[in-house]
Image 1 (cartoon, rainbow, N blue to C red):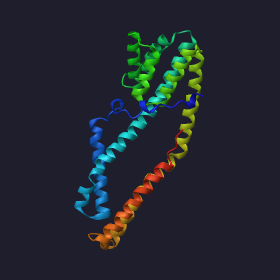
Image 2: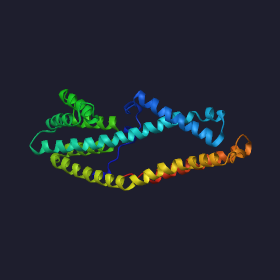
Image 3: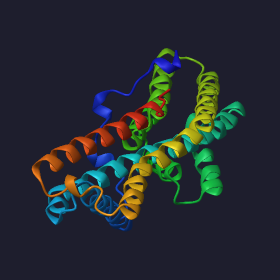
Length: 258
């Protein structure tokens, strides 16, 4: 039952609530994106004009990396949230109220992860909200909206239902911890199984460039007919599109959602 809750669209895709990358990361990924553009312009077109035409790809690459980092950050936050629920459950088992249990969980997470951890920052907001007499349900939904983590929304939804129906909150938290533990275990097993395939995919992505470089190095002018003419531009453009499509398909194949 717990797995049937899904975060509504109103909670998703909020640019205001999305964590931004650091300036150094933008510069880093911008340099990598420009390097990719230069490599494509050289291997497929041998043209400076191609660099200018493909330069918008740098922005696209930065946005893709921003999404990848956000996805990685959400996974890390979910793991931290799982640890927080374990601490919360331990406090509830000893008879603490949900408010006091959250305060205790904040102290434990701060000691365990440090002040810079996302879950610690979120629990600090929750702690301040509790001091201002804001209902825990609202604080949990706000946390879910800021982090964009489905599991936090699911927990907030289940907790809200338990409060409204007079359910056993302690039992609910214990059940939710069990569900998340199982989910994390399955995801980690899948990640272990496909990690080798991900590495192979990265190798396969660069092999075509090494082949072209090797042939060009050993047979000067072998690809000359494919550059600086209409026929060559068409052929190389098709080849580039097929290459990008294969990279995209390989990436989608090894991405498994639970």
